[in-house]
Length: 187
Image (tube, rainbow, N blue to C red; front, side, top):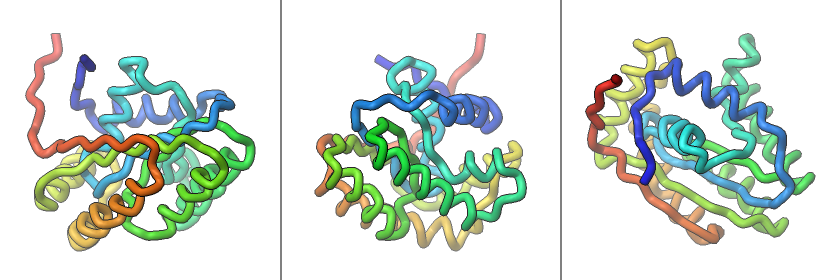
């Protein structure tokens, strides 16, 4: 059983930055964490990493943008896509986080699948886009990046729809309904 903790944005960010710098492993596994903005993908990945359940390079456009400081969203997304392609070309295991709101993400993952990768996909979702909007607002108040509410809502539905295509090329599929808030106390 994993000890699941809802980390603050800054705690999670530090862990994800550390994960982005792990030396690549050559065993051809592609871990995909997909779901709408604010579903809790980064928090789940942070928990997996902190509980020693995930130990591979983490690729995410938000981290690339954060580390690059002056990059646009588009530049960061292009760099993330390029890094995924490089990892596939070299046969490295990696973890890729995506909102999955555009079919091009399925095409990118299909490249890994066509190159013999084991695709392990996890959908992190909530039962309402309003939950996601509230969580993105909280993340923004904690110093994280904001996403306009209309984009969160439109991406919410596209993400869930696109996951159906991802399931078809996945060797393993996991879903995580993260609708409930987790209450905890730190000792």
